[in-house]
Length: 371
Ligand SMILES: Cc1cc2nc3c(=O)[nH]c(=O)nc-3n(C[C@H](O)[C@H](O)[C@H](O)COP(=O)(O)O)c2cc1C
Image (cartoon, rainbow, N blue to C red; front, side, top):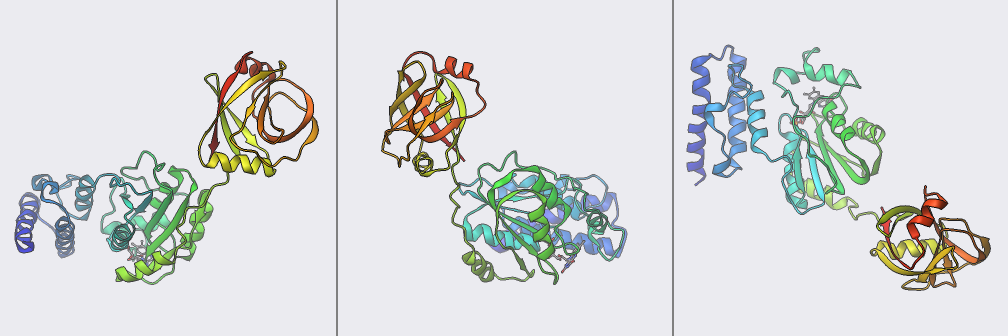
């Protein structure tokens, strides 16, 4: 079976090569070697894909420069891959890999964790000459020399909201992450996410790149990353993943949404025992409370359970949310002096607005945690 696929692929590769070669000869021995390596790499890649995803060989000279080389192969591969491979997992393996070493590690992580995958590619693909780092002026070197340079990415996921954990992979370029990784990091909000860097290199460690990633954008939690050799085994990747603390961190709930009479407001949650108990309740799901009008200054009603009270005499202000007698929530749209425990405070709404929102009758209030 594999032999048959290989024959088809060989034919496919020839079909790719021939029209280009006859219309525009491959000039140098170096270009021939590039071409052969490129076709081999494409064959390897295609072997992992079902037949219906094979590219149209007549359209192989993707950038239409008359030469079939790694830049075309990169574009072909890009057009065959969905932006992120859809998956139920909340973990994403996002990586850049120009010569497929990092991609091999990314593949292992996807296999081992069931994560979704996103391969970032440069909008202008890197040619072999672009990454010939022995040439001091090559594109990759120029980009690395300018810490503010941001390599444009070909296609980016609209959002990363579906993921809470991101394995971020790249090759080490001059001791650091390629600038395309900086472009990716600056495009999304990682403040609530766990990011785990991984890389491949000839011999350098991950050190500087990890520090740069940590200082570039706010990241919720960045785990210690890992450098792999190009020849790293799946077992060594598996061992590393096993050593990571991947249990999602419970995010502390300090604010909530309050919806009443079709209007949604936000409120802080008090930093006391009662507030913590309310936050814990909200962490389990939204709370719907029936609150009765009382005294022309408050709405009051039962909570589903008692909360720890530490009552003190308070003159309330509009927007105050109080615990009354340990088991009831009182929301003030005007003032009253009594003994309460603070639960929170509605933010950025005036007394007049509160009066209008809460109205004169009984209300149903829905409280939701803000994470
Ligand atoms: C521009 C450039 C700079 C590089 N700098 C380093 C380096 O500083 N240290 C190192 O060990 N390897 C370096 N390498 C080698 C790559 O890190 C290594 O080949 C890597 O595995 C390539 O990954 P990829 O196949 O995913 O692109 C560099 C390669 C390039 C193209």
